[in-house]
Length: 84
Image 1 (tube, one colour):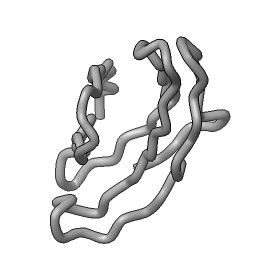
Image 2: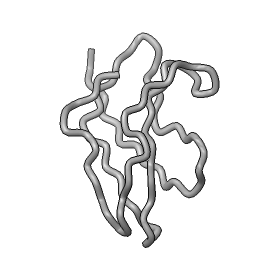
Image 3: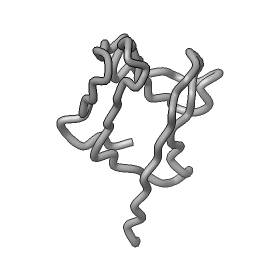
């Protein structure tokens, strides 16, 4: 099986569930980096969840719950690969 590399980005401007990546069925994905930054200039709180299926009805697993970022801060959230 060939490796496929994907780079996904989102600029979050609302307080709603936003899908960054969906693993294709019968596949797996290895997330090597999860980089977040605050560009509001006033700090932000973020939550990162992993859903087993559609976010509206699936099991939810918290990866980062209410993670605080200071104004204009950038954080690398993963220290090890995440297999999905």
